[in-house]
Length: 320
Ligand code: ASP
Image 1 (cartoon, rainbow, N blue to C red):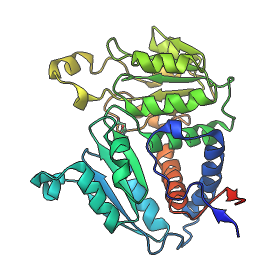
Image 2: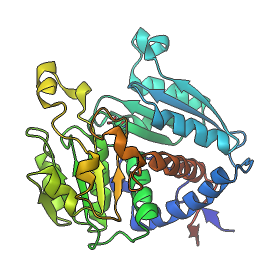
Image 3: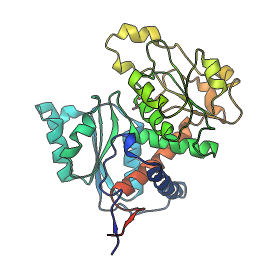
Image 4: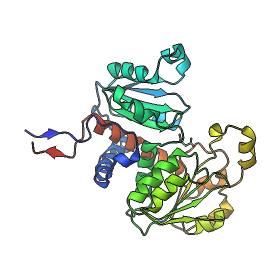
């Protein structure tokens, strides 16, 4: 009898846990999920399964898209957003909270301001634990949906011919940290542009340079010219200890309709959102602006992830 083993029960904690084969399968399932969404097909794949979202930091897209994903596959969900109403406010450790929730739910999606804490508490959970972002560390599911968006928007494979440029808060932006690592696995050349003091952390820069070509741009015009993908991020205000430092940097870069004239005719302008003022609203109607389509792809990727970790779509068959 064949036993499917690979994705079932898996935690989603960091992007370095994925292989190219993992992504191939994830995106094959994602296509199926997008079909369900686009055609409003009633689905019962996850009927009987219950998910909780444990968020110690604000979220709109990540928590809502996981909830929508669960509902569209016939499952149910429960949200813990304000930890002040949970036992965390009584002094319970994150470890005990996760262990408790794992007794009550079939899958946990968690966000926390402390870098590294989600991977560290994963052993407390006997059900799949999915990171929805750990401080300035990583945001693995965002990176997966970003990669899927690139594939769909450009209809080109990930390889050294593609040029992805990331701008904004490269220091604190966890989506940058995850996406750059995933793209480096495919040897996609990466370009960066950041205001002073918000450059990529040195260790990450060295890690990426060992796998692919890296360029740093001195101006936003130079940065956008060569981009097949222009990935914009906001300055992560909540990570600044001194608000005056944020005030000095805010508004220091912006994608405008004027700037878009320097961009290639076929390219994707992406943003993990929320945006503050990094992309002018007038740009939204540009056909290259992909950031709202990115959300819909994200829903399908998260549906696929839930189906996979709950053992409903296994690619690998053990011969044992
Ligand atoms: N929503 C993304 C995150 O949670 C991006 C951001 O907040 O700027 O990291």
